[in-house]
Image (spheres, rainbow, N blue to C red):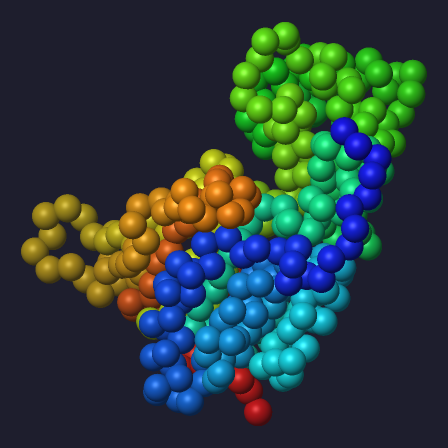
Length: 354
Protein backbone atom coordinates (compact mmCIF):
# COMPACT_ATOMS: atom_id res chain seq x y z
CA UNK A 1 0.00 0.00 0.00
CA UNK A 2 1.15 3.50 -0.74
CA UNK A 3 0.16 6.99 0.31
CA UNK A 4 1.41 8.53 -2.94
CA UNK A 5 -1.24 10.04 -5.21
CA UNK A 6 -0.83 9.35 -8.96
CA UNK A 7 -0.25 12.40 -11.13
CA UNK A 8 -3.52 13.38 -12.90
CA UNK A 9 -3.54 12.71 -16.65
CA UNK A 10 -6.03 13.53 -19.42
CA UNK A 11 -8.97 11.14 -19.70
CA UNK A 12 -7.74 9.83 -23.05
CA UNK A 13 -4.46 8.75 -21.44
CA UNK A 14 -5.97 7.33 -18.26
CA UNK A 15 -8.57 5.12 -19.91
CA UNK A 16 -7.92 2.30 -22.37
CA UNK A 17 -11.34 1.00 -23.51
CA UNK A 18 -11.70 -2.76 -23.11
CA UNK A 19 -12.52 -4.87 -26.20
CA UNK A 20 -12.97 -1.63 -28.12
CA UNK A 21 -12.84 -2.94 -31.69
CA UNK A 22 -15.08 -5.89 -30.90
CA UNK A 23 -17.67 -3.60 -29.30
CA UNK A 24 -17.59 -1.26 -32.30
CA UNK A 25 -17.96 -4.14 -34.74
CA UNK A 26 -20.88 -5.68 -32.85
CA UNK A 27 -22.77 -2.37 -32.65
CA UNK A 28 -22.03 -1.34 -36.25
CA UNK A 29 -24.77 -3.26 -38.16
CA UNK A 30 -27.57 -1.66 -36.16
CA UNK A 31 -26.01 1.80 -36.49
CA UNK A 32 -25.34 1.60 -40.22
CA UNK A 33 -28.81 0.19 -40.91
CA UNK A 34 -30.42 3.15 -39.15
CA UNK A 35 -28.18 5.66 -40.90
CA UNK A 36 -28.99 4.16 -44.29
CA UNK A 37 -32.73 4.12 -43.57
CA UNK A 38 -33.12 7.44 -41.77
CA UNK A 39 -29.91 9.41 -42.02
CA UNK A 40 -29.00 9.01 -38.35
CA UNK A 41 -28.67 6.57 -35.43
CA UNK A 42 -28.71 6.62 -31.64
CA UNK A 43 -26.70 4.54 -29.15
CA UNK A 44 -26.77 4.55 -25.37
CA UNK A 45 -23.43 4.22 -23.58
CA UNK A 46 -24.92 3.12 -20.28
CA UNK A 47 -21.59 3.26 -18.44
CA UNK A 48 -19.91 6.33 -19.90
CA UNK A 49 -16.89 6.50 -17.60
CA UNK A 50 -14.20 8.56 -19.26
CA UNK A 51 -15.84 8.26 -22.65
CA UNK A 52 -13.43 6.01 -24.55
CA UNK A 53 -16.06 3.81 -26.20
CA UNK A 54 -18.28 6.81 -26.94
CA UNK A 55 -15.40 8.73 -28.52
CA UNK A 56 -14.64 5.79 -30.83
CA UNK A 57 -18.31 5.39 -31.79
CA UNK A 58 -18.79 9.07 -32.59
CA UNK A 59 -15.57 9.15 -34.58
CA UNK A 60 -16.46 6.09 -36.64
CA UNK A 61 -20.05 7.21 -37.35
CA UNK A 62 -20.42 10.94 -38.12
CA UNK A 63 -24.23 10.64 -38.19
CA UNK A 64 -24.48 8.96 -34.80
CA UNK A 65 -25.78 10.43 -31.55
CA UNK A 66 -24.67 8.89 -28.24
CA UNK A 67 -26.51 9.24 -24.93
CA UNK A 68 -23.89 8.82 -22.21
CA UNK A 69 -25.10 7.76 -18.76
CA UNK A 70 -23.08 7.87 -15.56
CA UNK A 71 -23.93 8.32 -11.91
CA UNK A 72 -20.44 9.68 -11.25
CA UNK A 73 -20.35 13.47 -11.66
CA UNK A 74 -16.56 13.45 -11.91
CA UNK A 75 -16.74 10.98 -14.80
CA UNK A 76 -19.34 13.10 -16.58
CA UNK A 77 -17.14 16.17 -16.27
CA UNK A 78 -14.06 14.42 -17.67
CA UNK A 79 -15.99 12.72 -20.46
CA UNK A 80 -17.73 15.99 -21.30
CA UNK A 81 -14.37 17.70 -21.75
CA UNK A 82 -13.04 14.82 -23.84
CA UNK A 83 -16.12 14.70 -26.08
CA UNK A 84 -16.78 18.43 -26.39
CA UNK A 85 -15.64 18.43 -30.01
CA UNK A 86 -18.60 16.27 -31.03
CA UNK A 87 -21.01 19.03 -30.09
CA UNK A 88 -24.72 18.17 -29.98
CA UNK A 89 -24.11 14.56 -31.02
CA UNK A 90 -23.12 13.73 -27.43
CA UNK A 91 -25.86 13.80 -24.78
CA UNK A 92 -24.55 13.35 -21.20
CA UNK A 93 -27.04 12.34 -18.49
CA UNK A 94 -26.31 12.15 -14.77
CA UNK A 95 -28.18 9.00 -13.79
CA UNK A 96 -27.87 5.35 -12.84
CA UNK A 97 -28.04 2.99 -15.81
CA UNK A 98 -31.31 1.37 -14.76
CA UNK A 99 -33.00 4.71 -15.55
CA UNK A 100 -32.81 4.29 -19.32
CA UNK A 101 -36.47 5.21 -19.97
CA UNK A 102 -36.03 8.45 -18.05
CA UNK A 103 -32.77 9.22 -19.85
CA UNK A 104 -34.48 8.74 -23.21
CA UNK A 105 -37.27 11.07 -22.18
CA UNK A 106 -34.79 13.68 -20.94
CA UNK A 107 -32.81 13.66 -24.19
CA UNK A 108 -35.86 13.54 -26.44
CA UNK A 109 -35.40 10.10 -27.99
CA UNK A 110 -37.84 7.20 -28.06
CA UNK A 111 -35.85 4.16 -29.23
CA UNK A 112 -32.20 3.39 -29.94
CA UNK A 113 -30.04 1.31 -32.27
CA UNK A 114 -27.57 0.07 -29.70
CA UNK A 115 -26.82 -0.08 -25.99
CA UNK A 116 -23.36 -0.64 -24.51
CA UNK A 117 -22.55 -1.66 -20.93
CA UNK A 118 -18.99 -1.72 -19.58
CA UNK A 119 -19.77 -2.82 -16.04
CA UNK A 120 -17.89 -2.70 -12.76
CA UNK A 121 -15.63 -0.02 -11.35
CA UNK A 122 -13.99 2.26 -13.91
CA UNK A 123 -10.29 2.87 -14.42
CA UNK A 124 -10.31 6.42 -13.11
CA UNK A 125 -12.26 5.42 -9.99
CA UNK A 126 -9.57 2.89 -9.16
CA UNK A 127 -6.85 5.41 -9.96
CA UNK A 128 -8.29 8.14 -7.69
CA UNK A 129 -7.17 7.16 -4.18
CA UNK A 130 -9.60 9.53 -2.44
CA UNK A 131 -12.55 7.59 -3.86
CA UNK A 132 -11.66 4.58 -1.71
CA UNK A 133 -12.20 1.87 -4.35
CA UNK A 134 -8.65 0.48 -4.33
CA UNK A 135 -7.13 -1.60 -1.55
CA UNK A 136 -3.65 -0.58 -2.72
CA UNK A 137 -4.01 3.01 -1.40
CA UNK A 138 -4.82 4.33 2.05
CA UNK A 139 -7.84 6.59 1.51
CA UNK A 140 -11.22 7.51 2.96
CA UNK A 141 -13.47 4.44 3.08
CA UNK A 142 -16.06 5.73 0.60
CA UNK A 143 -16.60 3.65 -2.61
CA UNK A 144 -19.65 5.62 -3.82
CA UNK A 145 -19.87 5.89 -7.59
CA UNK A 146 -22.02 8.97 -7.05
CA UNK A 147 -20.15 10.83 -4.33
CA UNK A 148 -23.02 13.29 -3.91
CA UNK A 149 -25.42 10.85 -2.27
CA UNK A 150 -25.90 7.55 -0.45
CA UNK A 151 -24.14 5.49 2.19
CA UNK A 152 -20.40 4.87 2.14
CA UNK A 153 -18.38 1.73 2.67
CA UNK A 154 -17.54 3.07 6.12
CA UNK A 155 -21.27 3.11 6.91
CA UNK A 156 -21.51 -0.55 5.90
CA UNK A 157 -18.55 -1.86 7.91
CA UNK A 158 -19.39 0.26 10.97
CA UNK A 159 -23.16 -0.26 11.07
CA UNK A 160 -24.07 -3.63 9.56
CA UNK A 161 -24.54 -6.54 11.94
CA UNK A 162 -22.21 -9.53 11.89
CA UNK A 163 -24.77 -11.55 9.94
CA UNK A 164 -25.38 -8.73 7.45
CA UNK A 165 -21.67 -8.25 6.84
CA UNK A 166 -21.20 -11.97 6.37
CA UNK A 167 -24.01 -12.03 3.81
CA UNK A 168 -22.56 -9.09 1.86
CA UNK A 169 -19.08 -10.60 1.71
CA UNK A 170 -20.35 -14.06 0.83
CA UNK A 171 -22.97 -13.06 -1.76
CA UNK A 172 -21.42 -10.03 -3.46
CA UNK A 173 -17.74 -10.95 -3.06
CA UNK A 174 -18.02 -14.75 -3.16
CA UNK A 175 -15.58 -14.63 -0.27
CA UNK A 176 -15.11 -18.09 1.24
CA UNK A 177 -13.79 -16.59 4.49
CA UNK A 178 -16.71 -14.18 4.82
CA UNK A 179 -17.65 -15.03 8.41
CA UNK A 180 -14.07 -14.86 9.61
CA UNK A 181 -13.49 -11.44 8.04
CA UNK A 182 -16.86 -10.08 9.19
CA UNK A 183 -16.12 -11.12 12.76
CA UNK A 184 -12.72 -9.42 12.66
CA UNK A 185 -14.35 -6.24 11.37
CA UNK A 186 -17.01 -6.16 14.09
CA UNK A 187 -14.42 -6.82 16.82
CA UNK A 188 -12.21 -3.97 15.62
CA UNK A 189 -15.07 -1.46 15.27
CA UNK A 190 -16.16 -2.09 18.85
CA UNK A 191 -13.13 -0.09 19.89
CA UNK A 192 -12.38 2.10 16.86
CA UNK A 193 -14.65 2.90 13.92
CA UNK A 194 -13.33 2.38 10.39
CA UNK A 195 -12.66 5.52 8.38
CA UNK A 196 -9.76 4.53 6.09
CA UNK A 197 -9.20 1.77 3.54
CA UNK A 198 -5.78 1.05 5.06
CA UNK A 199 -7.29 0.14 8.41
CA UNK A 200 -9.74 -2.23 6.75
CA UNK A 201 -7.00 -3.89 4.68
CA UNK A 202 -4.92 -4.44 7.83
CA UNK A 203 -7.85 -6.18 9.55
CA UNK A 204 -8.53 -8.37 6.50
CA UNK A 205 -4.87 -9.37 6.21
CA UNK A 206 -4.75 -10.32 9.89
CA UNK A 207 -7.96 -12.35 9.61
CA UNK A 208 -7.10 -14.20 6.42
CA UNK A 209 -5.79 -17.75 6.81
CA UNK A 210 -2.09 -18.11 6.09
CA UNK A 211 -1.26 -19.69 2.75
CA UNK A 212 -4.57 -18.80 1.11
CA UNK A 213 -4.54 -18.37 -2.66
CA UNK A 214 -6.69 -16.37 -5.08
CA UNK A 215 -5.05 -12.96 -5.21
CA UNK A 216 -4.92 -10.19 -2.63
CA UNK A 217 -6.92 -11.11 0.51
CA UNK A 218 -8.81 -7.79 0.38
CA UNK A 219 -9.90 -8.11 -3.25
CA UNK A 220 -13.22 -9.86 -2.69
CA UNK A 221 -14.14 -7.85 0.38
CA UNK A 222 -13.60 -4.58 -1.49
CA UNK A 223 -15.67 -5.88 -4.41
CA UNK A 224 -18.48 -6.89 -2.06
CA UNK A 225 -18.54 -3.53 -0.29
CA UNK A 226 -18.54 -1.63 -3.58
CA UNK A 227 -21.44 -3.70 -4.91
CA UNK A 228 -23.40 -3.16 -1.69
CA UNK A 229 -22.75 0.58 -1.49
CA UNK A 230 -23.81 1.15 -5.10
CA UNK A 231 -26.54 -1.51 -5.25
CA UNK A 232 -24.87 -2.67 -8.45
CA UNK A 233 -26.47 -6.06 -8.98
CA UNK A 234 -30.02 -5.01 -8.17
CA UNK A 235 -29.59 -2.08 -10.56
CA UNK A 236 -28.22 -4.39 -13.26
CA UNK A 237 -31.22 -6.74 -13.01
CA UNK A 238 -33.42 -3.81 -14.02
CA UNK A 239 -30.98 -2.17 -16.44
CA UNK A 240 -30.49 -5.03 -18.91
CA UNK A 241 -34.22 -5.58 -19.57
CA UNK A 242 -34.72 -1.80 -19.83
CA UNK A 243 -31.92 -1.61 -22.39
CA UNK A 244 -33.41 -4.44 -24.42
CA UNK A 245 -36.82 -2.75 -24.32
CA UNK A 246 -35.30 0.42 -25.80
CA UNK A 247 -33.85 -1.29 -28.87
CA UNK A 248 -35.49 -1.16 -32.30
CA UNK A 249 -35.50 -4.22 -34.54
CA UNK A 250 -31.90 -4.69 -35.64
CA UNK A 251 -30.63 -2.82 -32.60
CA UNK A 252 -27.96 -4.49 -30.54
CA UNK A 253 -27.07 -4.92 -26.86
CA UNK A 254 -23.39 -5.34 -25.98
CA UNK A 255 -22.48 -5.94 -22.33
CA UNK A 256 -19.09 -6.49 -20.73
CA UNK A 257 -18.90 -7.79 -17.18
CA UNK A 258 -15.89 -8.39 -14.97
CA UNK A 259 -17.12 -10.85 -12.39
CA UNK A 260 -19.34 -13.92 -12.42
CA UNK A 261 -22.31 -12.35 -10.61
CA UNK A 262 -22.65 -9.63 -13.26
CA UNK A 263 -22.19 -12.10 -16.10
CA UNK A 264 -24.94 -14.40 -14.79
CA UNK A 265 -27.44 -11.53 -14.74
CA UNK A 266 -26.55 -10.47 -18.29
CA UNK A 267 -26.66 -14.06 -19.57
CA UNK A 268 -30.02 -14.77 -17.93
CA UNK A 269 -31.65 -11.67 -19.43
CA UNK A 270 -30.35 -12.42 -22.93
CA UNK A 271 -31.24 -16.13 -22.83
CA UNK A 272 -34.75 -15.39 -21.56
CA UNK A 273 -35.56 -13.27 -24.61
CA UNK A 274 -33.61 -15.34 -27.15
CA UNK A 275 -35.54 -18.59 -26.86
CA UNK A 276 -39.02 -19.72 -27.84
CA UNK A 277 -41.63 -19.99 -25.11
CA UNK A 278 -43.83 -22.37 -27.13
CA UNK A 279 -44.46 -25.84 -25.69
CA UNK A 280 -42.25 -28.57 -27.12
CA UNK A 281 -43.91 -30.39 -30.03
CA UNK A 282 -46.32 -27.62 -31.00
CA UNK A 283 -46.84 -27.96 -34.80
CA UNK A 284 -46.95 -24.20 -35.40
CA UNK A 285 -45.10 -21.71 -33.23
CA UNK A 286 -47.38 -18.80 -32.22
CA UNK A 287 -46.03 -15.34 -32.93
CA UNK A 288 -46.14 -14.44 -29.23
CA UNK A 289 -43.88 -17.41 -28.44
CA UNK A 290 -41.12 -16.58 -30.92
CA UNK A 291 -37.82 -15.20 -29.59
CA UNK A 292 -37.54 -11.41 -29.53
CA UNK A 293 -33.73 -11.48 -29.66
CA UNK A 294 -30.94 -13.61 -31.07
CA UNK A 295 -27.54 -14.14 -29.49
CA UNK A 296 -24.76 -12.70 -31.66
CA UNK A 297 -21.69 -13.17 -29.45
CA UNK A 298 -19.64 -16.33 -29.64
CA UNK A 299 -20.54 -17.64 -26.21
CA UNK A 300 -18.72 -15.60 -23.61
CA UNK A 301 -16.09 -13.64 -25.50
CA UNK A 302 -12.81 -12.71 -23.83
CA UNK A 303 -9.96 -10.36 -24.59
CA UNK A 304 -7.01 -11.64 -26.59
CA UNK A 305 -3.62 -12.20 -25.02
CA UNK A 306 -2.32 -9.19 -26.94
CA UNK A 307 -5.02 -6.91 -25.54
CA UNK A 308 -4.49 -8.20 -22.00
CA UNK A 309 -0.76 -7.51 -22.35
CA UNK A 310 -1.56 -3.92 -23.36
CA UNK A 311 -4.40 -3.44 -20.84
CA UNK A 312 -4.33 -5.74 -17.81
CA UNK A 313 -7.88 -4.76 -16.82
CA UNK A 314 -9.17 -6.58 -19.90
CA UNK A 315 -8.15 -9.94 -18.41
CA UNK A 316 -11.40 -10.50 -16.54
CA UNK A 317 -13.74 -9.00 -19.16
CA UNK A 318 -16.59 -11.19 -20.42
CA UNK A 319 -18.58 -9.95 -23.38
CA UNK A 320 -22.11 -10.97 -24.41
CA UNK A 321 -24.26 -9.49 -27.17
CA UNK A 322 -27.74 -9.88 -28.64
CA UNK A 323 -29.82 -8.34 -31.44
CA UNK A 324 -33.54 -7.57 -31.42
CA UNK A 325 -35.28 -9.51 -34.21
CA UNK A 326 -38.94 -8.95 -33.26
CA UNK A 327 -40.97 -6.38 -31.38
CA UNK A 328 -42.68 -7.25 -28.13
CA UNK A 329 -46.38 -7.79 -28.65
CA UNK A 330 -48.99 -5.59 -26.93
CA UNK A 331 -49.65 -6.83 -23.42
CA UNK A 332 -46.45 -8.91 -23.41
CA UNK A 333 -45.87 -8.12 -19.75
CA UNK A 334 -43.83 -5.86 -17.57
CA UNK A 335 -40.10 -5.43 -17.21
CA UNK A 336 -38.23 -5.29 -13.91
CA UNK A 337 -38.79 -1.55 -13.68
CA UNK A 338 -42.55 -2.07 -13.60
CA UNK A 339 -43.19 -0.34 -16.92
CA UNK A 340 -45.03 -2.21 -19.68
CA UNK A 341 -42.97 -3.01 -22.75
CA UNK A 342 -45.72 -1.63 -24.99
CA UNK A 343 -45.75 1.71 -23.18
CA UNK A 344 -42.26 2.41 -24.48
CA UNK A 345 -42.77 0.84 -27.91
CA UNK A 346 -43.69 3.26 -30.67
CA UNK A 347 -44.82 2.41 -34.18
CA UNK A 348 -42.18 4.74 -35.65
CA UNK A 349 -38.63 3.40 -35.77
CA UNK A 350 -37.34 5.81 -33.06
CA UNK A 351 -36.49 8.77 -32.70
CA UNK A 352 -35.95 12.15 -31.29
CA UNK A 353 -39.18 14.01 -30.55
CA UNK A 354 -39.74 17.45 -31.99
